[in-house]
Image 1 (cartoon, chains in turn cyan, brown):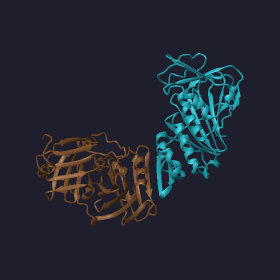
Image 2 (image 1 turned 60 degrees about the horizontal axis):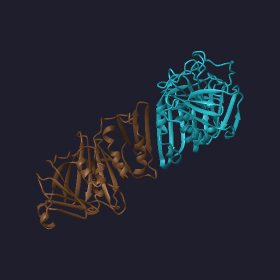
Image 3 (image 1 turned 180 degrees about the vertical axis):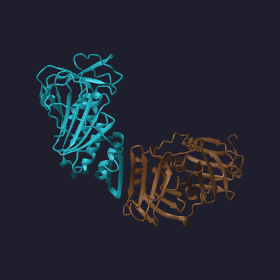
Image 4 (image 1 turned 120 degrees about the vertical axis):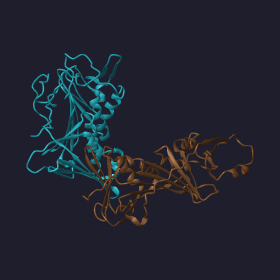
Length: 294
Length: 280
């Protein structure tokens, strides 16, 4: 596998990785025909994110010879390759990602200004396939907003806050001490198609990772959701990349707000991944997942 | 000793060393670059002041403030040496809060009467005078690393800007920093071996950051990361750095530091290699 990222795209790649680090501790890397997929999942399997970089995102993109390859590595290690985001744009001319299956290493080489070459040889582990099953188009409700709108809204909630509820035009926080509610009128959104008056509750912390990414790239965020218990999907796309953050929501049975851990937080509706406990969502979803291999 | 009402000249008769600076920062800033241990050995000669700090017999840092930097430098012996607590000294030099307001600086008059006497600092800012007396100790003999130019195998001089970036990103989970210098690829390489894998920072000999490149033989040496960590302070202050290794693998880092008045001072670090390394 050989990928070359040049110019401003290096920073986009770095930001996507930083954004995935808000979800889980491991980065799953899978080069596919339709692009390079970078994924992450949290420990309770209630939040999943995937960035797919199309071959056109790269100035060079070639797959491993003849076989499927996937691996995972500590996300902190990959973050250390792209340490200072601020200087990335100014100093890095291109980033070369190369796979060495003999040595179980993924090598990131940054060609920087002034003849400086930074090479990071990171060890990886073989991994299982990590793909969530979700269907955006089948969701009953969708809205799309400029990232600034959501960032400005979320800033009103304290950083330690665990969860937020989205009612079609109402955003509120539930905690023992305080309830914060923020209303956004439908005309503040670029696109607003809501078919039922609904309320879904999901984890705010995981959302912030996507917000940071969207804001820096200026891409609008689309949010797809159904009834409580169905996962909510937050999406950013442009011509060469697609990012999907899939977050489990509390089902009707889960009313309590457990502050201290994410493991017990999502009870019935937690599990999104095939093979794990049967998720509590309504009609059978169509398997239309841009992050799965065809 | 109470504040004397005698004239300045009478007082000075007692001192074997008097050094004055209009701006104490020209001393304190450079001392901060070597302040990784509490104690420092001061060696004054008619050429100026040398301050030495050592760590576990493996690392030595020297700051040189040559006589031209001082507004006044009077020394009555060929060599005056003493040891003081560097942390205390720096606290005294910054006693007025170390503000960087333009036009306002702390003036320093450093006086030493000789063996057994404290080091006396007269600090003045905006008309307010503070007198500090710091106890001195018998100076330890600084280690002689026996590093001489004739034994130098490889030498490069780099602009600090690029090294600063590399040092700020170094993988601190690596126990060692490996330095490779070679007349062929990779020319000048800094390597770390950490928890997630290894990393290499290569500087090409043709880089515009490379001011001098004189490497005759390929050498690879490892140094304990913890020992080299203090050098980042000197690096941060410097505009240029020279990296030299000798036939034993000993490392000499020399930093060119410009003070507030644009004058040049030098800080150097000597470090022992960690172990013999076969060339890879």
